[in-house]
Amino acid sequence: MTRMEKICLYLAIGGVVLLLFMFFFSTKGVLDYSRLKSRQEQLEAQATIAVNQNSKMEKEILKLKTDIEYIKHLAKHEHEMAAQDELVFKENSKNQGAEK
Image (cartoon, rainbow, N blue to C red):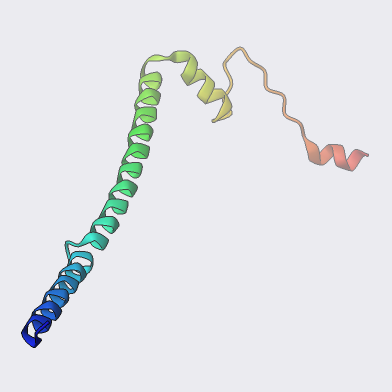
């Protein structure tokens, strides 16, 4: 190999190395692509969770608008309300402890 051929070979190898470096580490390179791909997967998972939550809320809103038994259930169990014909018995735990 002549000296000129060696110089051209080294320049070609340097150019290939430079192109590979730019391919992996540039703004639109492979590393940036993989980072953006993982971010996209995270956002899609969050969107799926939000869609499921919205669906549950829409079903509950529909029940609150139309299902009287569901409304009674919520009033009784979550808000501690009783119907007019029900009796409520409460345990007084402070008096029981003092009597024993």
